[in-house]
Length: 336
Image 1: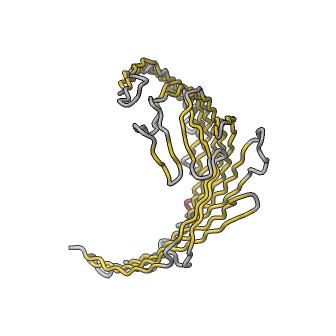
Image 2: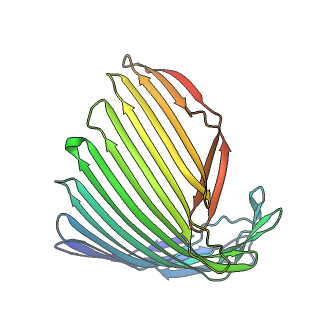
Image 3: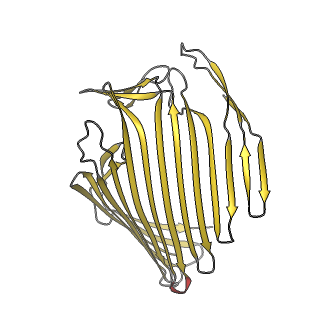
């Protein structure tokens, strides 16, 4: 059970304000099946933020703070299976993490030229009172808590730009972001610090100059890798590409036709790629205000398998799922 009392003080001046707060937290924990007993902690979580407008177009935000957060791990009186071969031993008490964070954001917005630019950087430093160790065996993986300090550091940097050209009916947005995380990984009796890196570049294009057609395109490129550490192979850079496209047609009143295409190229391991391509389509026609006819086609290309791979620089996941194939549905909708 947690209670918080948050006194706050705000200093305002011509172009901005400074806000400080000093939450007082009381956290009480008691785990019925644990022999560790209950306890009550009283702690402060100071926070400060500064907002300043240099001009109607330029705005700066700076903030920082520190706090203590309780773990959100699943707790049970006995071990449980999170998968068919993964056995999890839950902690006998609620873990706590002390964290310190700092962030900065800068924004430029010109509503006359319809151009917006954003920059943001965030850093955090955390120390948890425990971590999980993974023990991999031939037939079973066990996950157990280890009550030792675990330090985690992360850095996130993002910049984006939006431009709208009203006369051409075109809107463009580009985003670049980078995330770096240093965290401990423990398996089979060995504990090391692993550094994961994720770089992403994304773009959104939308064109709606004409009343009867709208087109949107959303490509994304991800690059993930780990810094070298003792025992690493060095072949840990993976790249993924995702693309989504939409087409909406309104040829005459009451009729809407939509086509969406999703394509991704996944590097499931160094130099080996998997491709997914899916097309869905639909058409809806309302001859009257109370009747609507519909046609929906899913998985138009009749793909049999869907594959997904993700690498955060820390953890790698890959899975494939069987699909039902192409599906066509007709519908008639009445409203009373």
